[in-house]
Every structure is written in C-alpha cells, then in structure tokens.
Image (tube, rainbow, N blue to C red; front, side, top):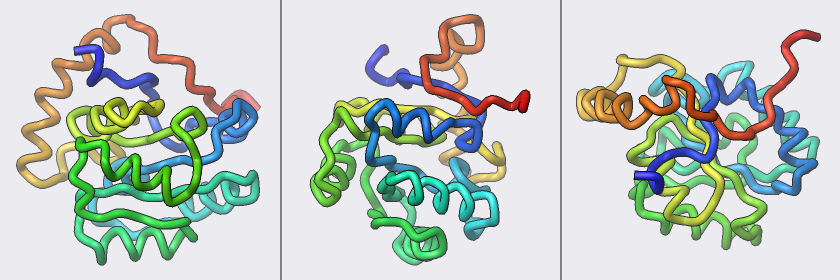
Length: 177
C-alpha cells in the first residue's frame, strides 16, 4: 500500500513553492494536466501560464505526462511553453516518467511529479523512483465516468492523510504575505 501513497499531499499545484523546490535541487517537474492544473479538457489559463513563466525564469524544466490524446496535451504544453510532453502515457507504467527524465537529461533525485490521481499519476511516479506530489483535483466529479469511479477508491486510500497522517514536506507558498 505504501508504494501507491504520495510522497506529499497538498491542496493545489498553485500552493507549491517551486522556488524552494528549485533551491532543494529539483530541476525537472513533470505534470499531469487535467484536474492538476486546469479543469478536465480546459485550455491553459492565466494562472497556469504565469506559473510556468515563473518556473522557466527560475531555471526549471517541465514536461507534461498525460494519458489523454495528443491534441489535448500538445495544445496545453505549447500554450505554457513546456519543454515537451507525452500523450497516451500509459500511467501508471513508469516508462513515460523514465523517458521524460532521459529526454531532459535529469536524474530521479532532481525530478518531481505533480498529479491529481493516485492510481495513475502517483503510482507511476513512485514506480519510476521519483518524488510524487498529489494535489486535490481542480474540479472534482466533472470527469469521465471511469475517473469518477477511481476517485472513490482513491478516497479510501487517502484516509490516513485525511485523518492526521503527515502530508509530507513539500514546501508551500507563504499565504500570509
């Protein structure tokens, strides 16, 4: 069971302090797209575009790993200036994660993955040996039926996090400023 649990669990991708992650040595961020960054099927928005502009300025490289079709993933990656993407990635199979690291010439210790599903995103990242950050879905329950069904199972898996288990050590932005 521990192999499918995320390294970190946070409310939103946009709460993560990517500058602190960069300072910790991370150089490649791999992202799922749908419900991790924008609602399922939605185009890149101002918030996502700004996030990736800032990350690029920091020196981060980033790619998108999605089980969706190429037109969806390509258009999102192009809109935010991604360093690449994979579509129909076959997550949780770790091959897409490993291929992305090889393409970007970044090792496991300097790579992080951010996604909204345990049984695809997190499990695949863990199988690839990289840090996994699970985020709450941007727009839950407005998805394809098979994803909605997986969400019920994922909720059961997440019960330790819901009832007090540590959410990890992912640095978060200071919202008090």
